[in-house]
Amino acid sequence: MTLIVEAKQRLGAFSLDAAFTSERGVTALFGRSGSGKTSMIRIIAGLARPDEGRVVLDGEPLTETATGIFVPKHRRRFGYVFQEARLFPHLSIRANLSYGRWFAARPAHGESFDHIVDLLGIETLLERSPAKLSGGEKQRVAIGRALLSSPRLLLMDEPLAALDDARKAEILPYLQRLRDETDIPIVYVSHSIAEVARLANQVVVMRDGKVEATGPAIDILSRPSAASERREAGALLEGTVESFDALHRLSTIALKSCQLHIPGAALAPGKSVRIRIPSRDVMLATARPEGLSALNILEARIEAMSSTEDGTVEIRLDCGGDIILSRITTLSCERLDLRPGRAVFAVIKTVALEA
Image (cartoon, rainbow, N blue to C red):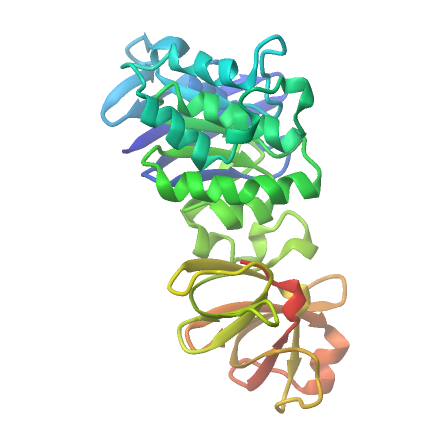
């Protein structure tokens, strides 16, 4: 699947002038509120026409202002999940899900229904009414309804924005399963770096109506500039689960040349995982520290340093091929005599990590 989007649109004082190309997997439109993400996804869906531009899916033009092509939204065969679930309150969950099958290009088989119900963990909800569901449960049903329409492309516009942290934590594993176990390409809009780090294969960073950067999630989200707020800055790593210590609830993750210990739920050995390491949770030492509670102490070399106006220093570290970021005070940097090329030890709080 190849999606090409080019759009120029004037919306009052706001000007959208952006373009990107995405392949299979999850492409995240990422940026602050007001950056143009929702305007772009509405143009992709056919809910809005750009002043100039085109939307092309696998060579088929769906919008092309130069030739006057504009395929109506109901003929694009796209699934759309909004911030709110928008379920029919008078229908059961089973009936809400079945409604999506009316829009399928071909009859949906029972296996498809059962597979999606299992995928999203909603089998116990089928006979309930929407009023009896939590926010996270409603969103899972909304996703299931969209999937049962057999979409060529799934558009998700801030689907977790209306949920509290507990509900977000509940639904994110299901979105990961959706990414890994279906062939449906997804365009995912979010301003949350934590969500994008967990889900996206490709990231399109938007700012003030323009595309600021685009590329693999690992590369884009490890840039200090990717974070909308300094406290969100960090690095994204990929690794493989080596083992799980059931007694201490710790998974050991193999990186390129070192290991990390991650607390929490059991992870199956051999599973590929992503780990986001916030720069604020990485301390530095010039000698290997002893007598610490931190389990993750990595040998590193300073690649680059940059000072900020708030009295801190952003430090890029090479840990045997894996790049992580650290943010420390200028005073600490001076006391340790840190400089590019110097060998250091990166100390990472174990409880700050999750996969």
